[in-house]
Amino acid sequence: MKLKQLEGILGSLQQFENPKIELEQYPTGPHIASRLLYTAENSFGDVSDKVVADFGCGCGTLGLAAGLLGAEHVIGFDIDAESIEIASSNAEELEIDMDFVQCDIRNLRLSDRTIDTVVMNPPFGTRKKGADMDFLSVALKVASQAVYSLHKTTTRDHIKRTALREYNASSAEVLCELRFDVPQLYKFHKKKEVDVAVDLWRFVPKNSR
Image: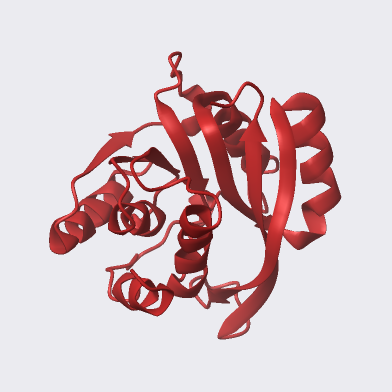
């Protein structure tokens, strides 16, 4: 599947009608989502025939992109039942077999590392300090091959240092810098759209397969 085709399909997905600010529910746009998964597959072979987990899956965009690119199995994890309902509806629409688990990522315990690749657009940590790092810490414990994640560019040094020193990463690489368009979803947003610079990271856990 070509990049533009993937982006077009992701652009048709149902999104949040009433996003929850406390969960920092900002939809992952089709432009960023398609590039994240396309890079993971075509540059590193981390999607096709792999078990892929979408952490904080929201409406399922990243996980469904993995399914479209040939993942063997996709699992979406989210704390919010409404998000899972939307994501499940999107999966049904695309005829992709994707499982969902409602849970707090911080409490996730997967001991046998059955997940090859984790993809995620975690909360930036602006509402709940450290939320982004909680996601990264767990992802690097459960992934056996790689973790792809989006983080604000302003946190780059902190992310790299913490991942390598404390979070079980053997490597932490910024693949590219992207513009994350945050639409005017909440009352405190003064502009119709806000551009946030984000890094697309690839982390490799220690003892990866």
